[in-house]
Image (cartoon, rainbow over all chains, first blue to last red; front, side, top):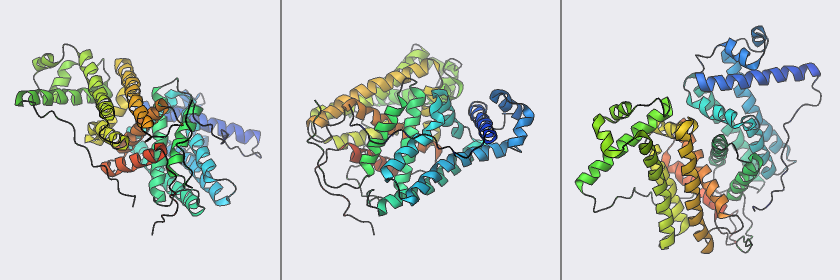
Amino acid sequence: MLSSNPVKQPKVRSRPEATRRERRKAEIRKRLFRAAIKLFATRGFTATTIEEITDAADVAKGTFFNYFPTKELLLADIVEFRLEIFRAALVEAERGGAPLRQILHELLYALMSEPGRSPAMARCMIMAPLAGGPVETLAHEIMAKGRQVLSAAIEIGQQRGEIRLDWPADELARLFQQTFYGVLYLYALHSNLRMSHCLDTTFALFWAGIEARTGRPRTSKKRS
Amino acid sequence: MLSSNPVKQPKVRSRPEATRRERRKAEIRKRLFRAAIKLFATRGFTATTIEEITDAADVAKGTFFNYFPTKELLLADIVEFRLEIFRAALVEAERGGAPLRQILHELLYALMSEPGRSPAMARCMIMAPLAGGPVETLAHEIMAKGRQVLSAAIEIGQQRGEIRLDWPADELARLFQQTFYGVLYLYALHSNLRMSHCLDTTFALFWAGIEARTGRPRTSKKRS
């Protein structure tokens, strides 16, 4: 057994003041997102029609335009949604209420919450950026911006003495993203993978690599 | 800058006694492998014909049968070839001549040597196991067997006091594979990624997470 991890599985943040109507809108938006990501990954962005997206999301075609004027703006919105996850982590780091270890662990969970719904969804997330065209361009944009935001959060952890100082924050941010894609890929391949166990062990290894070491020896703790 | 890594970039092992004819055979075999992986990833295993493979590899169709009686056996051979990389690492660990740090670092390079030829090749390696059918089944087989072999090598490192004992070797082997797929994915997405830098930093983080700690503090070394 791995050493147990004290960080609890984080829940997806929801604003308490959201009205029923707002929640309904957010729900439809998510359904359109999921349908679109699947279609973009399998058929490509250009070949996918708005009607196919609304059919797959099980909403009326006209509804689409209440949410997004164009297919391109739906895509831009997916990007924004992913970036929000990174920004929320940075805000947490800036507030200073939680250790970076917890913030980054929660970030890994939050990033996985959408593709972690099913291995099929994870496959779509993996394939979409490889499909070429505007989806690929935007995927690069998310990764670059996400890395920038994450880098700022990691720097805060370095200043606080929680994260090792001998590596640039930007490099650690890239390694975090890479770690996320590694676990995403394994989950896409192995439908029987226990997601929370996998995220916890993955994060524990990542953290063991980046934490500021205090000099405590670790080898004495032998497994039975 | 990251701290420099003393492990040199390993070369692909070649038996010195190989004759010219053997080398020529190995070369054609590799060309057939590469062509097949690309086609299996883009068109699927079933839809790909032997003629398409030989065309893409630029060899006569009859030549194929000098190497593989069937398309299925070509696929099995690709699996064997990937597994050999893991087995070579285990043999090295058993011989005891090199530290596990070096063996695992070299293993990461060796696993990447084929897909690292180009981002296009890396994409094919990523997509192939997601294509379904016999390719997916065999990809699972490689990963399971590779993990088993790797786990045995890691256990040797644990017995020698080089690798932390508080995590099961099997879990560390999975995390190694996951790490490999993470870097493979990033390389597939970003053609401008410097491969050796990326492999070195990735390995350094992985190793920092799994090494047996001796109690040396790390936080005092501040970057300028």
